[in-house]
Length: 262
Image 1 (cartoon, rainbow, N blue to C red):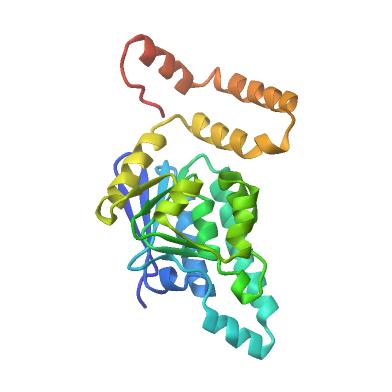
Image 2 (cartoon, rainbow, N blue to C red):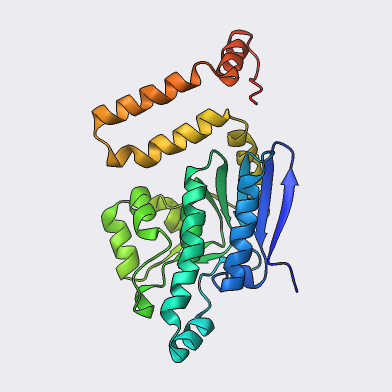
């Protein structure tokens, strides 16, 4: 059986995960989702990995659910169980990606649709090729949005733009997505992976506490009042004080050299 997700490791603790074949074209079959979850979780568990780049192949980053499978499960009465299994695999993965100290980067080579769009949104940053296309797709199917998209997208583009995106079943080109703030950078298709790897090495080279606490603080700021958030910041920066990485950062600054964090 063809490999559904390939992995290539780079210096600097970077893992490149490439969704292949059906994992990209219709990644949200049970088999495809198992492969995606296993590969991303494997990189998240790898102590030598600091940053993860996720990309697709051909025309697709990840095109979401297999509609032929949807049709089959509607016909045989197992659709609710099928949806529960898919979301039961995707949602815990997205939570881990958001909570991990590892940097997650989506290198969007082509279409990111439905839950595949949610996978991209769960990453810390999104770099798009000129061929990228962001699609919800839920409205035309009579579904409500899923894959964390209704939580993640409004935080990037604002509530009204997100609402129109979902209810109008809009399709955003790379340039539209950049204008709205749904992606952070556009490159040529040839420069997509090198750009993502370079950013992964840069952010992955930061101290683990810096990566983890920054992600945590930013994800939680909208649910806290200012006073509570300040206390949260205080607790985390105090926790960093005794670390070897903080000592290394101070020494490197005073010595006018680049820090070498653990």
